[in-house]
Length: 129
Image 1: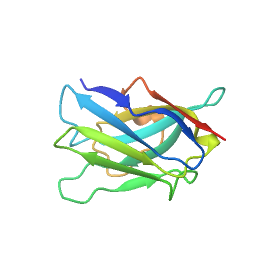
Image 2: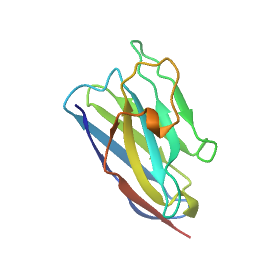
Image 3: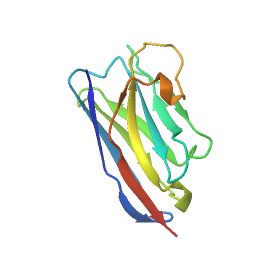
Image 4: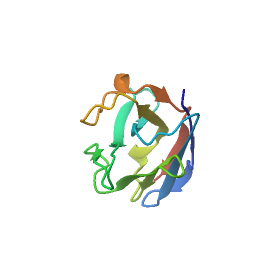
């Protein structure tokens, strides 16, 4: 069993930056694909970004079109932590951001939330205009 705890959310003005962290405990996440999702009020949870597991030094990443070029996902397996660097934030980025883990060892990055096995409780990100 893996426990995920997000941190780093807060209130920021449009154009600003935040760095979210997802700390994992219970076991190593080195073989898990890790993803970030978000859910705005009244909307469904949506995929934001994910980073694959890898036995080598290079990890695959995938981003939603809405955040491509502004957000960067990374991981530190030694720290058992995943990060989401968010730059050029927009009011429409306002949401609760969730960290998730996919333990399936699939070779492609999943963007459907149903394919992720473990979830954190989320951290609120609010971007003011």
